[in-house]
Image 1 (cartoon, helix red, strand yellow):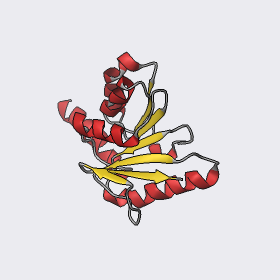
Image 2 (tube, rainbow, N blue to C red):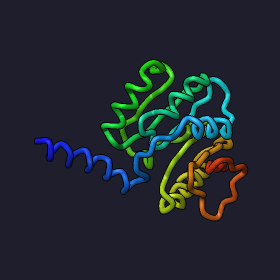
Image 3 (cartoon, helix red, strand yellow):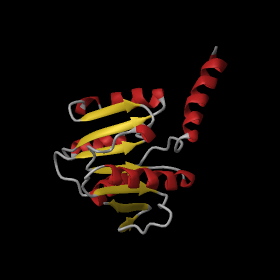
Length: 164
């Protein structure tokens, strides 16, 4: 029984590698830096793609931001919902694949993806800008750079990009 349960947990945490990145909790300092770089104002909406346990979403809510997190791992969805319960009026956790997410309501995006997915992510953001009359979208990537795109700012392993 325990072996089966262990296998299921390993499968759920390993499965997400096919779509983005493994679960690695964002430390408070990095989350604060990411939110500082995005420079969102109270009432604006942050999207976190691959929200893990919801730490960044919680810090966003503490800054009076609305926050939407996408997570594929159902265990982490539950953890994130518990961790952000206090802020449930301003934080929404979506159990789903962020590659299918509609980013039109986002005022800023935070993402941690493996290097091999950064070009695909860049293509998704470029497609977003050609499909609508969208505003400039600030995007912070943790640890990995967008290939061929120069960050507007960088601090402590976080890279800010602006998508028109």
